[in-house]
Image (cartoon, rainbow, N blue to C red):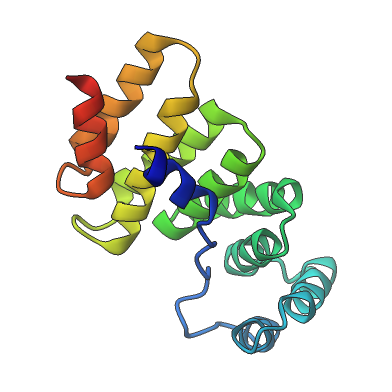
Length: 171
């Protein structure tokens, strides 16, 4: 389990964009990010938000870029807004990462549980969410709450490594 928890610490944010951006600012930001210029992507996306073009997709991408730049507090703000306005598994996953990095375990679990429920069965996203769910559970102080989280991970992602690790913790 220790290896699983250490792997979660290195988890990278998922790109919020599906690869087919909806606007020119988003297209430019995605291109910059893919070329390794996360700081440039941030500038483009922040300018779009300031100009009033802060769609959920733009805000989700900005949150993801901010995670790349190790700014989980700012990322959380944008990702929470994006999730509220256009719910999606990728956004929930990235919000869980932001809250995990902020050591906000309960809120990280809330976002992670949404991702587990919304992601496709057996998908890579579900695997990653299960791993984060197990890492979150391990950090919860109350034993009963920890077991509840393990049970939820095992329920929603039983076939993943994280789901199997959660089931093992329940025995």
